[in-house]
Amino acid sequence: MSDPTLLVLASLAEGDKHGYAMMDDIERFAGIRLGPGTLYGAITRLEEHGWIRPVASHDRRQPYTLTALGRTHLEQQLAGLDRILRAGQRRLKQA
Amino acid sequence: MIEPRIAARLAARCYPRAWRKRYGTEFDALLADSPVCWRDVVGILGGVASAHWSPSLAAVVLILGASFSWRSCDGAAVPLALLALNFLLGTPAIRDGDTLYLATRQLSVPAVCDAANYWLALAVVITAAYARWSERSRPTRRHLLNLAALPATISAEAARIAWTGYLAAGQTGQAADRFPLIWLLTALLIGAAFHQLALISLRGWNSSGSAPR
Image (cartoon, rainbow over all chains, first blue to last red; front, side, top):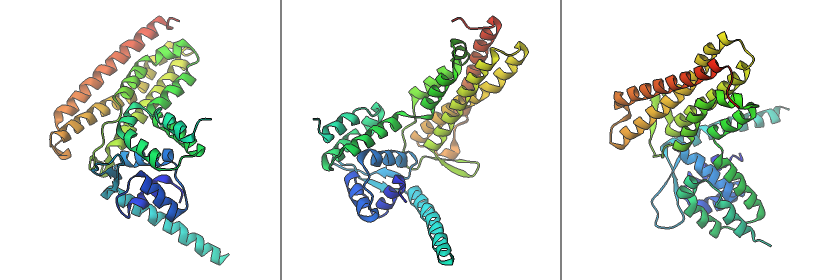
């Protein structure tokens, strides 16, 4: 669960955020500090895929929001991770 | 000793112009807000390399690697010209909701453009490999390989043109399901023109037997 794009999507699932707020939020909930280069690499890819989009702002700091497509993608990714998590935990118990 | 924050700002200047235009202001704001260390500078340089990298650029590197002589470069001249055109045109601007239903799968605009770029990159590599190989092959096989390698290039360029047409249709308020036939015809005509140019180019090269050094 250290894919920067997934971390950004998970952060935006809570609400619109700009870059620094995302970095701060990801560090709090995942314990991972994304550097500016990594964060904007993820933002660029996510926007290219249409999973996030910028929202109007009068500030230099640009907030982003999750699109419907992004929400669906996040749900699919989390469902996949959940399956792996459950299988891993079940197998650890059986071992 | 240079400060990491200053180094980060300098590194950020190395992003491609289009990237700077789109993300430059907010990225500078982020650098001003957040603590910056040397590890972040390295991360930014990685981001710079990644932003400059593309399937088209990858193809250029591959073809340079594959081309051990001027002859093979000459054989791939037409796809390289198309690749340069593709690279210059870049990916169209993204708007939320830009999607195309293709064979019941919903594809985003960048996904389609990426696919076109990959086709083009593949075509360049195939053509380079062909050019290299044909230096040692019998002349009768050359035209067959010309015909095998080039359609990928042409289809990629035609797809790009068709997609540009689709975007133009979207900008004028037309829905994707009313994609104008005229754009498809234009794409096919331009694709056919590229095909002819490519064949003429390679035929000339084949008839001379080798390219001038």
